[in-house]
Image 1 (cartoon, rainbow over the protein chains, first blue to last red):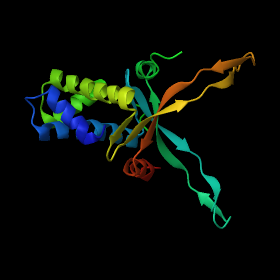
Image 2: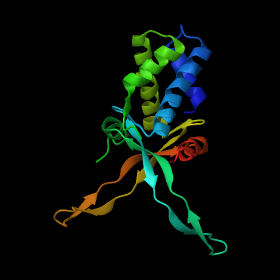
Image 3: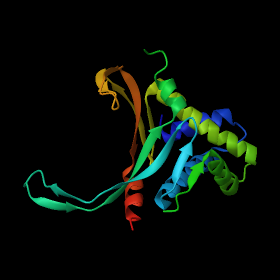
Image 4: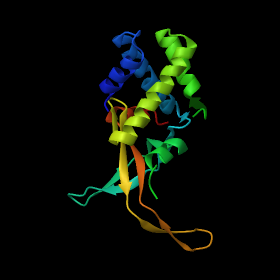
Length: 95
Length: 99
């Protein structure tokens, strides 16, 4: 499913909303999550999962072509941990 | 870092503020979005949200794990795990804010 398919599916379930309102709603949700992560906040969506920010320390990397050492600066990367309910749904009917 | 946690309630509040739907319909939409994404992951194994990121289901094979406390070997059954790959744009936004 893509973002536009998500909009289409929501439109079906909420027929009284305009397509452009649904697009704004979807944009608002993902922008709010992204902005929270940029602030360093955690985003916990019960049943679905949690987004957090992880710090990657600076390290010495190596250019794989030349073998030359390069400084890799510290980084902040988004991390997602699947929620319990979704993890169980993904594995239902197994084991 | 502020160390705050954003939940479904804050996402609903953002819709209420930005789009002007009622609070209850805003909350319903947050739930619906997450449910559509969950269902699609279970059934199709992939959700791509442009300029945010991609969620992909991966199959993990059986492997032998170890109880870290007792050192005892325990089989880990094959399972499906969900991986989130942030978009280039989201990565850059986060990294740009490094102090």
